[in-house]
Length: 85
Image (tube, rainbow, N blue to C red; front, side):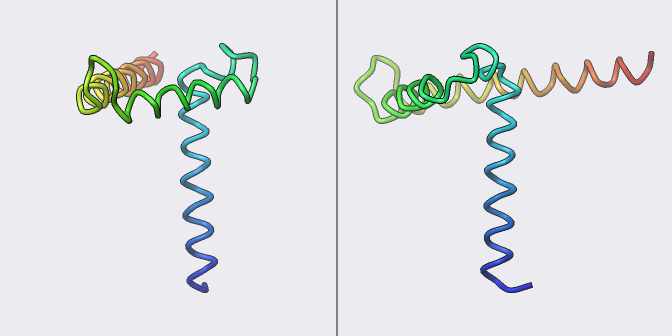
């Protein structure tokens, strides 16, 4: 496979995974699949990470990462319980 094709396939896979996170967070349903609302939310997150808040960008990322890891763990536990049933 050519390098450009491999890079394109990897980028596409990455973008699909990111879209899956948007879905997993429930944002598609919560925003009625309104792309402008989703973009606005992402722009707000980006602005928070650029600073100018009471909370530092590192603290925000740490808090969000913990919440994400907790959600992944809860999903894994739910799937394991479902398999056992």
